[in-house]
Length: 64
Image 1 (cartoon, rainbow, N blue to C red):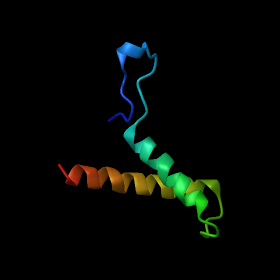
Image 2 (tube, rainbow, N blue to C red):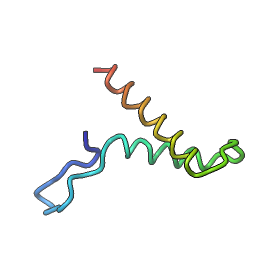
Image 3 (cartoon, rainbow, N blue to C red):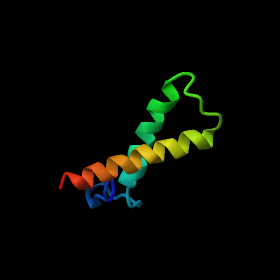
Image 4 (cartoon, rainbow, N blue to C red):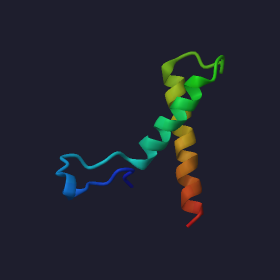
């Protein structure tokens, strides 16, 4: 599912951002804003952000 689907009105040349990536980017913003979370690498932050995104995608599916 796309967060920002293609809109021919604006003559876009891309297919939009995946909703999972959109959720992960917002989770990442929150994670990096918390000092001393105990994560030692950028990879750990990214993995954690996608875990949050996956949980949001699952919760979204459960709501339907």
